[in-house]
Image (cartoon, rainbow, N blue to C red; front, top):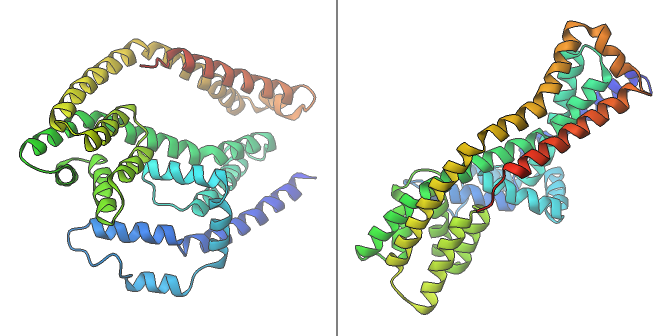
Length: 328
């Protein structure tokens, strides 16, 4: 297949992906409709979230069959359930079908920019760029999840202090969570607000806390949830328990910071090993295309060398990350 034919196929795929994307983005699934209503419920001046607004009525009257079909197919599969958990942990308001369409659009966009703008017709580099574009949405979601988790864990000691003070003031566990949802910064406020909403909707407290733990995959939060569940079953002074846990978490955060400082050199080494060879190859290709072009044009020798180099870079990065990842 010639390069012209490949471009035609990719352009046709881009048009099809755009059509599917428009259909997906034009309608939400029932689950995401519920999420939107819960979002309105979080606002101060809200109407009853059980009553759909005019916009929701329009969406319900004219659902997208393409969007519903793709959503149903992906949601019932393990990959769709995994994507739903990842999007929830990153607090990104996308359906599974929208996330899948984003993969396709990102792959096509990376290929088009690489082929027509950056590398000026070099097919190999454009295909590599499309490969990177396919994983770009996942990288973004993983990064957003990590940043959100770090913020939540840094806020957790102060959250527990607020919780302890509320309990000692005579509040119940649910009222204390309402105080946390009202006075805490993001993302803590959103997560505890969701727990309060679920309990008010009739979900058991244990299940609501389990949902919180699924959205925020934190060992420190797991310790807190376990303490709350045990106290609800056997009794005891929850304020004192949470106060002890808060002190332990503060020490853990301090120790994690010291470990991060001591392992910073290893992380920088991993970044250099990962990006320096790739950056150097791109620089040489821009400075002397004839010199580096032979590497991409020679399929018998150049392509296997590129593949082996990328594989070794990935192995080296994984080994370094494993060395500096100290479990506590």
